[in-house]
Image (cartoon, rainbow, N blue to C red; front, side, top):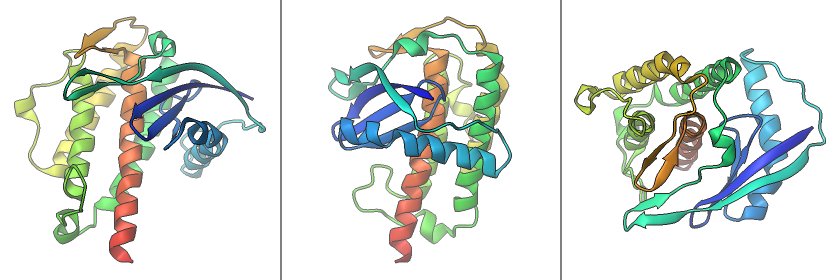
Length: 229
């Protein structure tokens, strides 16, 4: 089975390899080579996660043949904004099958996040984490939600910022429901937008939304592991 990869240095020491065939499927590492090398395990892990909950079934046929389709190096468009990749693959209009897949994977990501945080006491959610930009787990979860809202804002399609709930779980639910409601509107769209020097498309919005929740869920898992040790 061929796996076509887009590779980018998202930020210093953070290389991400994206799989064409499965939007939002990625591996990340401190080097380009390590990110690419991890892709077969990443794909098998994705299939296992989806199959475990019966959301989607895939035929897996390793060994995988890796094909590097495109590489992007991030750059600063202003002192405080790092432009991330827009790949040629991001120009491909979304299909109904893409949206069906995205709903399944977004649902799985949210299920996994909530299973981790829903029973955490406030003392753990609000515990300061040294060196963490979002300060604590509550801040990371809020960042997951507001980033998804921000992706819609790249297309001037987000609901007003003033309507974002203060309650953490209400915020997660409202923005995710909004995403699921509006995704079908993007089927077949060739629209692209440029914000702060960075280009966006519906396919890029989708892969980034899937990726962002997953990468920060794994970050929370690591923090909790350290707290419990």
